[in-house]
Length: 133
Image 1 (tube, rainbow, N blue to C red):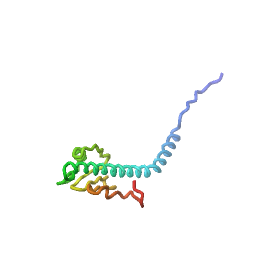
Image 2 (cartoon, rainbow, N blue to C red; image 1 turned 135 degrees about the vertical axis):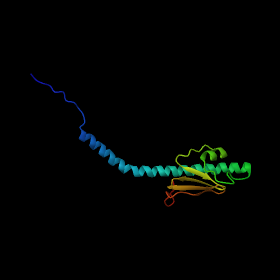
Image 3 (spheres, one colour; image 1 turned 90 degrees about the horizontal axis):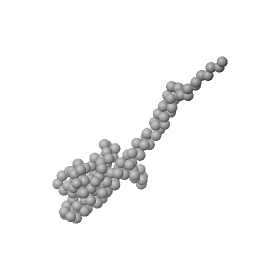
Image 4 (spheres, rainbow, N blue to C red; image 1 turned 135 degrees about the horizontal axis):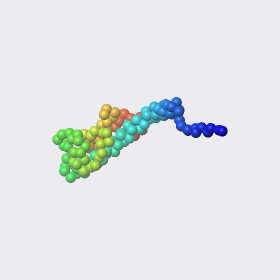
């Protein structure tokens, strides 16, 4: 008479912990590069959006004879969108427009400024040498 034992195939707790530790170490290697990529994407987004604001302001100025927000600072993206007929999504950026400058800022990481009379004039500290995202 032979007794057959049913062997269950399963992972032991040590094997599962080892996999979790390896995934954690891999994530620690990739996170700095990922966050830098996110910052560069936001910098490019702010430059593109402020270029749109600059172009929309040129149309606004040709119709009305003066820049958008001539007598104060507009710091609401919904006001900028409705005033210039745009549809800019904030994406973590805060925007403000004054009599001739518009600025996009990400919580102290970088700031991009557009002079509405001259175009994009300043960028962000992510630029190195001649490369700017």
